Image 1 (cartoon, rainbow, N blue to C red):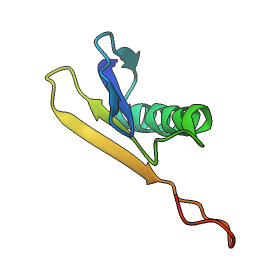
Image 2: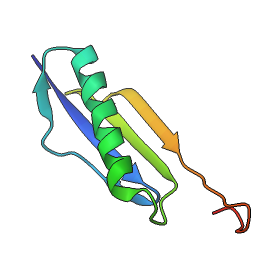
Image 3: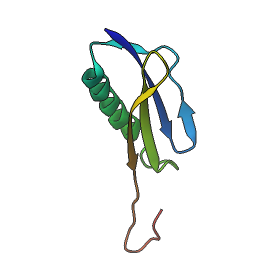
Length: 81
């Protein structure tokens, strides 16, 4: 088992993970990061945030994975946000 840390951001708001999570391998950390990114988007979509990211660090502090999503919307009668 290895400890991974999951730092997240929604727009300019950044939340570092100082606790981490013990997981069996990189693939488990990747899957956890993707699930976390989807949760973050569900919570923040429609706010001022239009970009969302999760980065994963290993125990040494090295970034081993990053996933990003960018959201935009528009209505034919309203300007793009």
